Structure formats: C-alpha cells, structure tokens
Amino acid sequence: MKSLYLRAGLAVLCGATLAGCGGGSGSLQLGGTIVGLTKPGLVLQNGSSTVSPAAGDTTFTFPDLVANDASFDIEIKTQPDPALATCDTTIQYNKGKANIYTVRQAIVTCHTATYSLGGTVHGLVGKGLVLANGSQTVPVAAPATAGADVSFTFPTEVPNGSNYGVTVLAQPTDDNGNPTVKCVVNSPAAVMPAAKVTTLNVSCSK
Image (tube, rainbow, N blue to C red):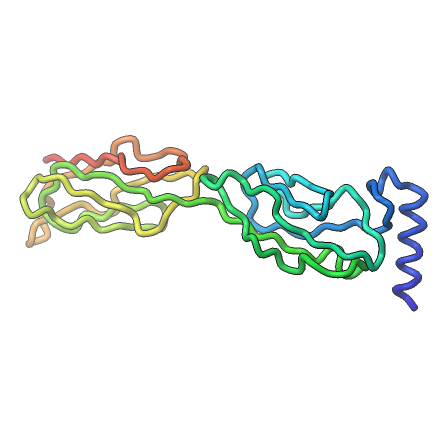
C-alpha cells in the first residue's frame, strides 16, 4: 500500500512539473550509477532515449520518463575512445519492469586504459640498481658487458592521463657493496599518454 502511495505521489509531481522531470509519457526517471568513468564519449541508450555522461560522472539519468511497469533495457550505444577507456558491455540490473525500486539500480562500470612504462639504462656497471615510479619498483639487472645498454619495464601499467615520476631508489654496487656508478633519470616526470612509453632514459656514470 505504501508503494502505491509513493507511485501516485511521484506521478502527480511529474505530471504537474513535466519539464523538471523530463520528457516522455511516463512518470519515472530511469538511470543508475557509473563506476570509474574518467574519459568522455560514453553514450547509453534505452530504446530511442539516450544519455551522454561526462567524464567523472558517477550517476546518469535518461531525459525521457518511463511508465510504471514498462519494460526497460539499458545498453551501451557508444563506448569512449578505446585508446582512453572502455566500459563493460554487461551492465548490472539493466533490464526489467519499471517501478520506483528498479529504475535506479543499473550499474555501469568503466576502466581507464593503461599502458606500459619503461626505457633504457645507459652505462650501467654493477648490480642492485632499482628504479621506482611511486610505490612501483623495477630492479635492473647488470648487463653481461659492463656499460652496455639495458632495457626495463615497470611491472604495473599506468593509466593514461595519470602523472608518473621515475626515480632511482637504489644505486648499483660491486660485489663488495661499493658504489660503481651514479645513475640519473633524465626527464623523469610526465603525464602518461594513450600509448606505451619506452623512451625513459637513465644515464649512469662515475
């Protein structure tokens, strides 16, 4: 009985102020929650009705109202640029019959695209060199030939649009623990592009 009163009250409110409640012939606003949307371009649809959440939005609402007990089916019409982000094609609670309990249950989950971060160490002599990007670290093995170039890649990819800053966490030493060369990261900080980075440059010298 209580739900009947709530439905009736909402219908009266939207009927009196349709412009504020959206278009369509129904009385219920259809929408839901968005998780992890950091990029633009997402378009959701329910039949012919569409909504385009902005980057950073955590909720969405279709502009057209739906009638009580009408069927709804929320789908992804357009994904963000896949180089930047993707959203799960399976939307939780995206289908059903509209009522005051079901019209806000849909959950859209999105993921920012990530890319590998790495580069080359020049002039490395000795062992124990460790590079860091925030809490992520990568040990760089000593080259077979002292001073030869050694490539490295951090084990965890970095979301595009995020800042990175690479530092030397531990300098190389010889077998007795004595310093061999001092390594410096050239141009260590930048914003992660929508592509892998392989151009970090670490120079080691005495």
